[in-house]
Image 1 (cartoon, rainbow, N blue to C red):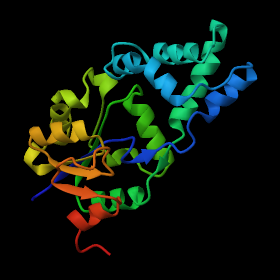
Image 2 (image 1 turned 60 degrees about the vertical axis):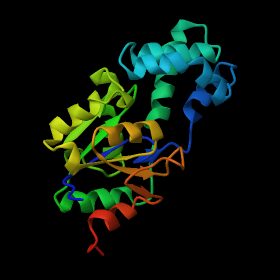
Image 3 (image 1 turned 180 degrees about the vertical axis):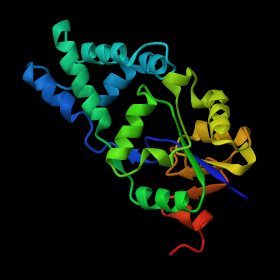
Image 4 (image 1 turned 120 degrees about the horizontal axis):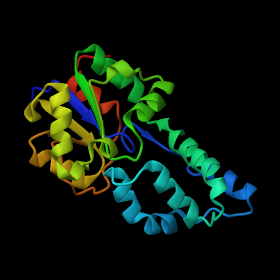
Length: 223
């Protein structure tokens, strides 16, 4: 398959967060509150997560709701609590091979972009990646759901990214981990690459367990 462009999911593909909630936990501890279990918070914030990722509410409003779930009632504490949550969001770690592989693909002339369902604006996420060594100018497209007002499963966000890349679906690959998003990308005609997918049974064009494997797919002669 002749691929000229590659779209990547962000969290779960380019990076992960191995130190979750450490700044939030410290903030809560300073105010004699305890960090609630992540599953409890996720259940309570399910609707809020959809709203913030689709741009219906602001990140600040979403963060305030999280703080309330953890028992923060004094609204004067919300700014510091939001800052703790933002520090945790920015505390990312690249998966092994991401930096080297992206550099090699960029040098080989591939157009690259990110498509992400996120409460965080593109400029924040670009800065987080730049702080880990990935230059901002490597990205031809960087589309975030909260700014675009649409989630990946809706499909239109892929069309926006393809327009920015200047490519068609047939010549573009999508590297993701979420089975519903991979299925949607396939329906739209993109070449799908599953990276440690959440559903092992998902049918995709390619499946990889290491980011280095992308070099084997599209840079077979690289050392």
